[in-house]
Each structure stands twice: as structure tokens, then as C-alpha cells.
Image (cartoon, rainbow, N blue to C red; front, side, top):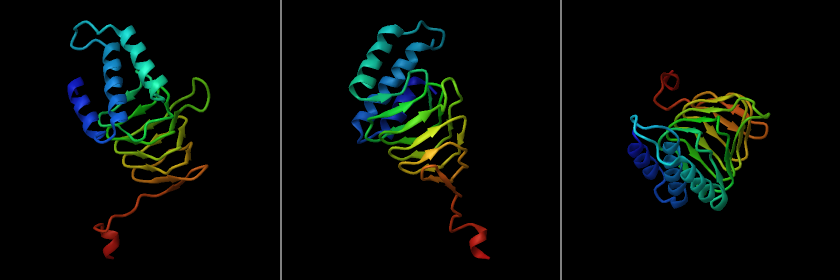
Length: 175
């Protein structure tokens, strides 16, 4: 996906959330500055990185290092107090609310992989070498330290995993 397409998806995903739009646009630009694009020279990475850190981390209070792997369409609601380890992998269309921490349990330990279409509630903590499956939900205030299957919900501290709900159209409902 090109930088322009990622920017469009991020801006659309954060419609009505100006802070989220600013964070994601600056994140994409800073990330692009770190890597060559189509064998063309990189943007001046150091000044772009410094600007990104000043605005996003110091002023807006959101810590998403420019090395973090973020999919397109990441939504940031009420972006303040968000801390994400740079070794975390986040898929497409993930919603992240205020005061969320995603990272490792121990220094240099493994970090989570968050798949597509996940929603993470306010004040949630997701740590360790775990996988949060596609479409999972992390409730506000949850402490998640183990895998969350696709479509499931993690609730509480420590988190209890509630299985995915069966849809009304599934064959199990018509027996």
C-alpha cells in the first residue's frame, strides 16, 4: 500500500477525531522518512523524526514510535496517554482509545501482535508475546497477558476471555 493510500485510510478512519488524524498523518510521514521508497532517496529522517516526537509525544501525549508496524485505518479516540512498544505489530482498522498500553512484560521481551479489526478500550493494557485475533474486543481497563481468539472479548484484570458470539444466522441457532 502506498503512503498516499495509507494516509487516506487513516484520515477517513479518524474522521471527527482531529487529534487522531494528526497523530496518524505525522506517524506515516515519520515512518516513510525512515525507509527508502521505490529506491528514491529518503526524506531527511532526523529532522522529521524530531518533529514527530516533539508534536506527537511531547505535545499530544501519544507514544507510538515511528518504527512500530501499524496497519492502515488505525483509529485513535481521545488520543492521550497511549503507549505502544515499537516491536508491537498492529493490523488494519484497529481502534485504540485513551490511556492504552501495548508492549512487553519485561525489557526486551516479546510484544503483542494485534490482528485486523480489533477494538481496544480505554485504560486497557495488552502485554507480552501474545496474539489478539481478528475482530476481538479488549474491554476498558482489561489487563491482557494471554492470547485472545478471533472475535472473542477480553474483560477484567486479569482478563477473562469470553468466546466469540454466534451470529443469529448461524446453523447452531436453528437446531
